[in-house]
Length: 103
Image (tube, rainbow, N blue to C red; front, side, top):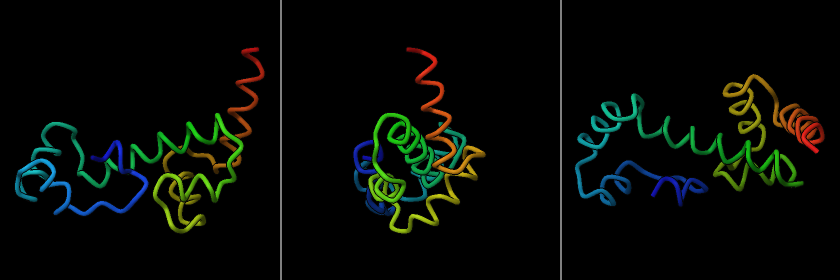
């Protein structure tokens, strides 16, 4: 569910119901298997998808934010910088430079 619905807010109840387990068990299972909470895992998916969109599309930063489940582009930019060390624009520029070198 997380990999196909990362673009919207997912609740623990919804995730647990999808997996046919309790919310507490789901949290414990995620911690055991992934070493992080379900929310952190979802954010890792969102960050990965955002990096892909920034590197491979001409979508604006706001459009990328909405596409990966953020309703506030400013918060998305802060989240992205925290996760990558770069702003979304800086990341895109570095991806464009890396892409042009490969050609």
